[in-house]
Image (tube, rainbow, N blue to C red; front, top):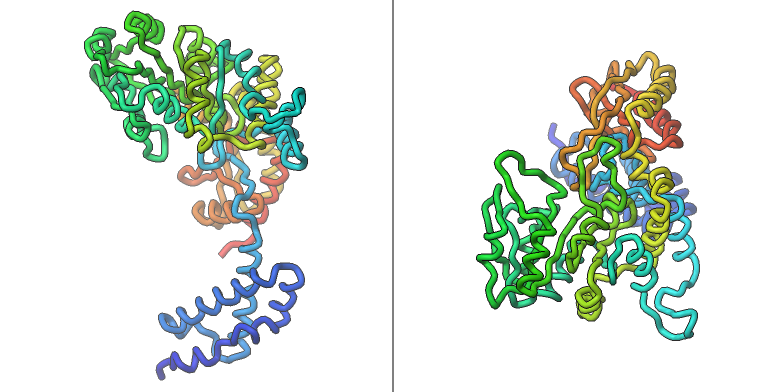
Length: 473
């Protein structure tokens, strides 16, 4: 005997009828009516589609169908009531994980953001004169002090900083850049495309692996507006290579009266080479070469909020401040508050290594991580006994965020091998936890890197794994 789709449709409760079901009616006391009604309509539509495609899956009686629908509505409401932007325990070991929000802000920045968001502030009000002020002035003196430059400007990310700089200094004219520096900066956005959007005309010189000073010199014409150097912060070309150093490029620019710009991408304010990382030029060193403009990110190796920072000679940066595009890419009060607090930590570089989470995670040595992994494993072992085997093994972390691409800092992983649950299912359950947990899936084990797990997340992680392994199919 076949299923009567029309009969199934008639058995579906109406919206008002379903809202009177005790399980659904109770939701109205806890959640906005609009949210509950939207969930009811969504679930009813799901059952209609199921009735058309797989009528055998629809409960037989009207009462059973109403009860099943009510349960689905309750689950849907709970899912819709959860914030879309949720906390995640980052157990991947990728410090600047772009998909997980990059830098974790220092406590001082969190306090500053709360203060700025909870109260009125002098965002664009000069308290000395009682007149309108500039939001950019709030961090400019601090940036000038830390970078050793004459003028600074903050926009919403480094791509915007590059766009604004090129549009201000080289619109409708030529910008010379090495072919080996035409990077993709993430999200499929590439330097040539950003340059095209700015109105500047790209002039490529040299080869992918080798560019010489003569290549720049031979390309200079009356249409040249700028010499651009793009630091390879997210990749490396090794072997038979040569690139022109910034100091050489600056000297060439001076010879021809041309400004020189350096796009650092991810900018250091402290040198981490003493912790075993490959050498990377700091912002101060880059500015010290005499470049007219240097741009870098606030949310990568700086360890602050998403921002693009432009620093350099007063004449060049002040021109950008007057560009109408500056308003379109400006930062808000919360970004400025977080950035200022983060920058203030750098006034004491040694303290910054301890107080800025990004720097602290990067500076953590193998011994510290081994001890941390041992404590986490000691918690997980008894909690997951009989359901998973817990162990430790040596491995490597990643910096992430398009920074230090060749760095492989040593770490010690905590591994979890489930007895009766697939790794795919375990990973899915952990992502659905509150807070969600994201780690590494390796062959027969789920791996947790303590480098990116905060001490106060050990208990959360243990509880999430306990629940995830609690029910098997």
